[in-house]
Image (tube, rainbow, N blue to C red; front, side, top):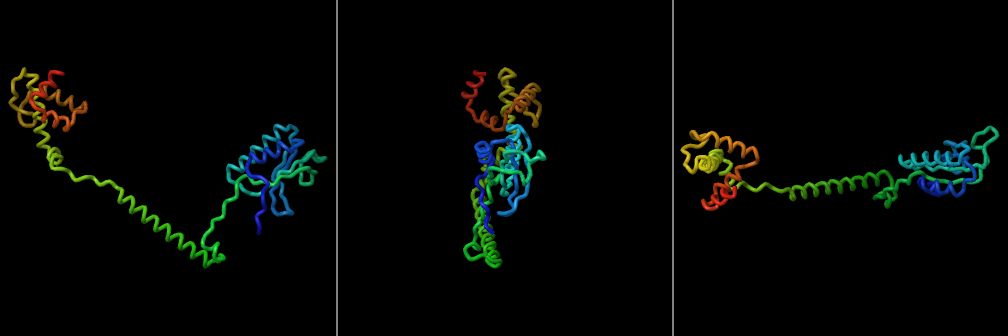
Length: 235
């Protein structure tokens, strides 16, 4: 069955036509069942052109937003029936065939070129699935290739992750802090190994809470005496 063509599609096209052709606020909207059969959907008996236009626009816009692509007819009437209503028998002076939304585009496949038929459709679907599976495999392989592998841990990083080495680095910093607090006198022990100045431990704990990390301690420990002294002078 051939698809009946619409004269316009969408709310704006319908409202433009209405504004150009309406001579009264009376209209009806019918669904076109066949070239010779229509079914009344709704009509407007409003005496105000503005109200009639607003009602029409709201209805057509709702159809469009919901993807309704049924073929309708907007029929303009010069006046109401003697009963005061608009019906299928009310005289009219203009009609517009329209669709609120675009028709879905047909999907062309192998069957469209081979004459259709269930056998051809099945073959076409099988080929489509094969292509989809192939694309999925390629995407999976690409993702696996692009995945960034974590580099193996270097001997230095492995050493720094050792708790005993970390303790030794902290001990070195404590020594620096202790020298500052004790007026340059050496400290005889380190936290975790022996006794140490309590104030130094409190300061180190505060530094760690403020974001001082093992990396920072490592850099301090690696400084030469002259560089460290210059840093202390700046403090």
